[in-house]
Length: 317
Image 1 (cartoon, rainbow, N blue to C red):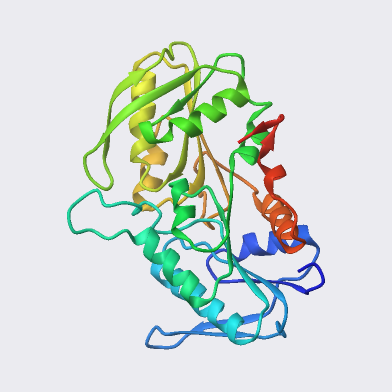
Image 2 (cartoon, one colour; image 1 turned 45 degrees about the vertical axis):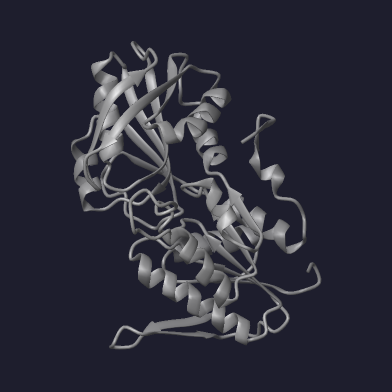
């Protein structure tokens, strides 16, 4: 693969990230025409030769998820029909990841369906960041490399946190992620048990751990409506926390999330640019994940291991 030409293209969901990745690699972003017809159909034309090339297509399948997924599928098909040797889809944010199991009667496992159609379209490999459920890697019958945002977030926070830090998971499912952060910072760990009232409302009802006098860092893979973070922050402060920060891999904020963060007691929300969104005037810090993705693309292109990208302070995340 190292002898094949490396070509990087991007859908329209996160062009700024794709441009930063290409800057890190030291090459221009590939030329592609992407437009919609009046009836909503998407048209794609790759405007350079990709015959025999190692093609990477960057597209976050964030909102509007259906539009962005369909755009990605059409780009894959265009590259395949143009005789690309290998097609790697780079999905910084994987939409539908929360529909990863049957938790009710007669519901789909849409995360698996999306995996199926990506492979059917012609994807040969997937590069993703912080899948909501790591087992989604097993939904694909092609190689999947999952990177973690934690090394980038850790580098930002390491000189900003004090001796009274405590890491907290806002739900039981995030315990592994929170434990990893607690190990990195060498600090205590707390856990919140929550109950989801609706799609946008969460009730945090039990705290495990002592946070009195602590500066608490709440870690999660994503936030959308901000309900989980808001509920967790209120409970932590009620239990004596001195301050609350939050760090999430994906800032998939909707209008409800913006409103809640505007009134929220969280001092700072740290996230990455896996999704192209406007922080507005809120206390949101967006750290750049492009250098890590660029390194992964170069290593995949030259058939090298990406394992080294998972290490922080010698700790394998």
